[in-house]
Length: 264
Image (tube, rainbow, N blue to C red):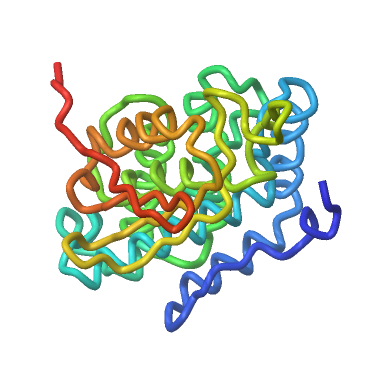
């Protein structure tokens, strides 16, 4: 991996959110959490042969999550900390960025069951990173909502908040070429059956729905597997019905079909 990318500062567009900017500064000053990202990546990439789960992944997920949250807010879909805890939309931004920063810490233990491994580590680091930013009540709420988002970001567990749904989808959208597992090419240079090469992912304001995610791919191999994976990320989440997934293949648009799954 490009070492300059690994050592780049953790950044998101903080806009006019002073607490979010302060959180970003705390993260960049925290050598322990940044080293934990690197340790997690060694387990994921070097020992398990998986896709990147290190510093670059963390920045991509944080920025995608913040983009999703802001688009949903602009179209009248408030975050859980706003509706249930009477905090502000700016506080919701800290939840999704903090959750993105800490969601994969558990991979330093093992990738298997890593959300569960992440929770105790995330609790400790969240308290440290939020030190001085909130009174006790508000800090406790932000940490609690952050832990919920981390607990439900992987697998099929139900997301109970908009923030959790945003993290789950953002995590899944880190899929462009070079970001996922290596693709085996066929003799004619096309992707092998069942595998996918993603050229670009864009998160935009939607027309019929609040959010439009455009995924540009050069070959349809693996399209159905990708659609199934994203559909499962949206189902059981407050984002279901709010996000339209569009795949572009050779400038032809393909809208991902959505349907409800039975919930036990």
